Length: 184
Image (cartoon, rainbow, N blue to C red; front, side):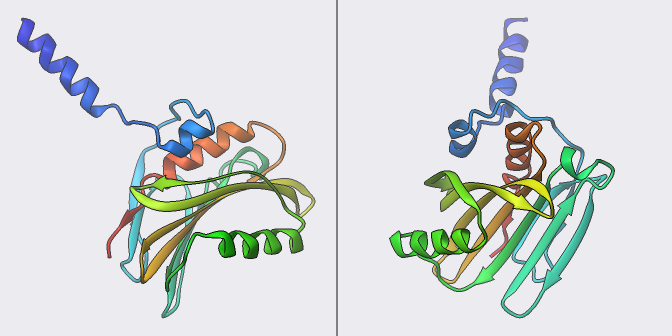
């Protein structure tokens, strides 16, 4: 009986998913678990688990491939849109990158209100949160740039419209983005 309890305890500890540093930084508690379909990009660079009921769109060309998904059964202001794009090329997550990023955000009239440089999916990454107005809605975006290698990187985003449950939707999107797997 003691061994059965010990075995159940060990399995329970092992199966608990640890929050990422990003989730810890944003005070995310454990998010809702979805039923997922594993989805692979057209160029076989990565896959991601997308909730089964979500609508998914794919784009690709010779240097990049993208997957976008959203829960189209909910209103735009109650859901979020996730996007993952794989790019060939080297990216350095340094001060030059930050300056270019800040210039782009300024042109788009988006305000960066949180950011950090830390590991995501066991890779070097830079993340930031912005807010502003888009299509007449209050808009928030989480962006995570993940350096895969000297030859490729991934940009993962979550777009959140409206003013309600922003942090909750950010945390749910991170739980989906954490399922990205590099295939190259």
